[in-house]
Length: 279
Image 1 (tube, rainbow, N blue to C red):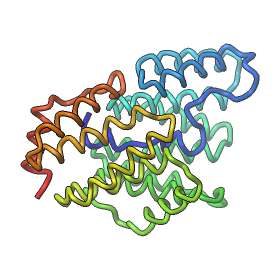
Image 2: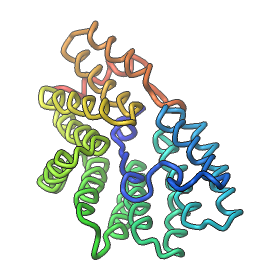
Image 3: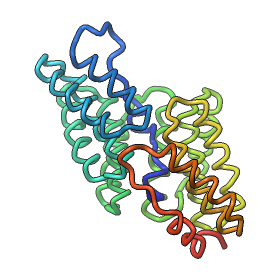
């Protein structure tokens, strides 16, 4: 699980707009049932099972001509692939979801898909496409707070492309907003992003408190699988400090809660990061 993968969000993209859950309406359609099961697998960190069930939900929704719901299932498939570190597959499904949202005039869904696509393309190193999708994610008359979520998406894109954030004050404003709302999934995303920026500077001492805060927020959310990324970073920091026992402790915790389908580096690889991580 590399640095780009473990930082994501994102609870994000499906965080703003469509969400990973199935419909909250009465479970009268097969796609609702598939979607609800998929969401449970997603929260449990079983991404391959979530993908399989979201695909069934999508096929069922298409058969019933439930267009917007079908588009959301496509977004959820993309999100699950992203959590497995498969940014290209995540992009492929998200592009299709974006087109469907546009066809059904779901501007919020389209904006969310575009923001997620920007992060996926930045994770693959494609800055031109990442900036293009960030622009597509912006829209007038957005709901209150939307600008904060987009600021975090932009910060994630910035970090993936340059290991820095162009507008840290906007990310800090988003942090304050999410604290007020007690949006713990998003808070964990922001804390991890801020930790990544400090790690890119070689400042492990500043990164550690952010990672601790991320774990605290993850513990208060339903997305426990996200803890693996923060724990891997803490493992590397401890190993860098010469504390092999603590490093192994954090590593073993990271392995135990890692999403199924995501590659976890060997302890030796995590330890080797010390040469370029903390200065």
